[in-house]
Image (tube, rainbow, N blue to C red; front, side, top):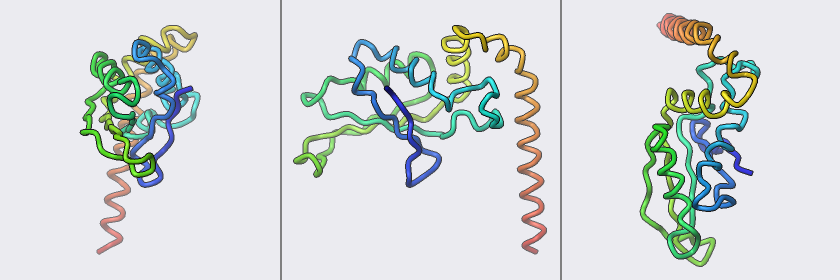
Length: 164
């Protein structure tokens, strides 16, 4: 199963686990499974404001360098970019001292929130009963975002007044 864990060093980064369980030719399924995961629920059932989905701004995933494992990282990167879900930067292989310096490759995915929501709505929610809820809540979501921005601005103004 593919999962996301918040990086302990920064709450804005999520670590993707379980990608190696999918074959290189099955990265579309890996993406569907990932996007079916709870942090991508735009139905409002999670009781979080819309602007908090997904829960991070970046995801990282890794794989052993070519020759040690199938190149699923590059295949997953292609699927992400195919659906305009963000950009993915691939590092050069570097030795991992925990595994006798066998090379590992790291991928950093900068999320495209609009693209992810579109994918989720069309590919995931459209297969569920919640699809109509999603389509009908666009105005509510817009208002939530506006309210979040107003609240943030208000809080920043109050902090500024308090520091004078």
